[in-house]
Image 1 (cartoon, one colour):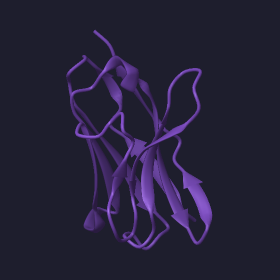
Image 2: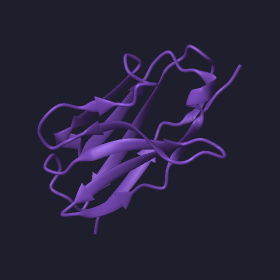
Image 3: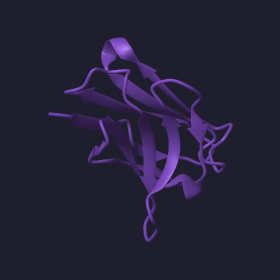
Length: 115
């Protein structure tokens, strides 16, 4: 059974940094595409960063140069390093994985950027 558990969210001031983690279980880590999405209040869920099993990572234009997705295969964990945070980065951030055509989601972690 695939499980994704996010952590690392919280309250941060504008210009600050956070690192989100997503611990995955029930998979052979590293062979499935993974991504981070976010959903702000009143808005649709949107892709933030995507890491395919092979190839180039991609980012939403709004986070390019500020966010970095990475993974540690030994820890079965994918990360989202978020720097220079802005108030409009406030959202619930979700970890996503696709395994053999089936989508899996974590429950999300809230990031609030406010002074």
